[in-house]
Length: 348
Image: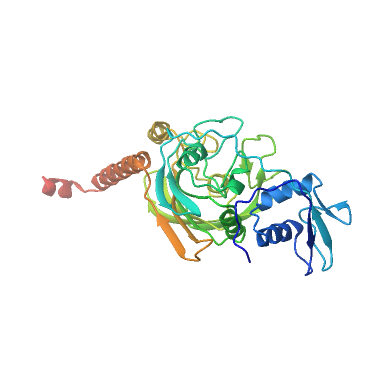
C-alpha cells in the first residue's frame, strides 16, 4: 500500500470497485483512497455520504451501508477546505510526548479542548496549531483538527491529539475497540465503594447540558466504569476510575447517579454538600476534582506500546491535603473521646 500523502483532493470523480463482501462504505472508501495516496478521514467521508457525494449505481450511499463484491462506487469529493482557526501561541501547553504522528499533552483544568459555540478562542487546539506539524488532511476538519477524544473543561490530565489523518483514524479505531488505557483519580463526596457500573448513557431528559444513566433520551450508548477505592477520608473518598468506554461526562454521571458520591466541586452534578467544610473545599477548588492520570495506547504507526502518567495538579493536591488533615483531626478527636480517665491521667 502507498504511504498516505498530503495530496490535495480535487473535484474530479473517483471510481472504486469493491472486491469483498460485508465492509462498511465509509471504511472501504477511506481504505481505497489511502491506497491511492490520498489521506481522507472517515469523518470527512461520512460527511460526503450525507451530502450524496458517494454513490452506488447512481444511488446515494449511506456511510454505514454494507458493500458487496462487484459494487461500483463513485466518489465526488469536495475540494480541500483548510482550517480557519487562527493559531494562538499564547496558549500554554505542557507537551508530554510528540512525534510526527501525534502529540500527548497534559491539559490543565479550565482549558477548553476545541472551539464550541460557547468558547471560540484560546483553546488547546489553537495552541497546538501554533506549534505546527498537522498535515493538510487533518486541517480539513475546521473546528476539531486531530481530536480523537476530549477531556471536560474543568478536568485536568492526559490527552492525545493526532497530527495526521492516518494516525487519527487508527487512534479512533483503538478508542472504538476499547483498546486505550485510561485511568482517572477523583475526590468524591461520601463513602464510595469498589464497583463496576455498566449502564446506558445519553442526554438528560430535561437538562440538555447534562447526561444521565437513568432515563437517557435518543438512542443511548453503553458506558462502563470500574471504580476502585484508594483512600477513605472524613466525608470524602479518593477513588480511581478505569474506563472501558469514553462517553461524555461518563465518570461524573456514574459517581453521582450510581455511586451516590458526586465529585467534589462538580458544578453540574455535584450539588451542595451538607458539611459546610466540604462545601467550602469544593468552592475553593472551583472545578470538579477529576484528573486523567494514565493514558496508554499502541502507537498507530510504530505499533510500540506507549504509556504516560501524570499526578494531579496543585489545586487537586491541595484539596486532598486538606481532606487528609480533616481526617487526621477527626481521628485524633475520636481517639481522645474514647480514652478512660486513667488513660488521660497517664498521658499527662
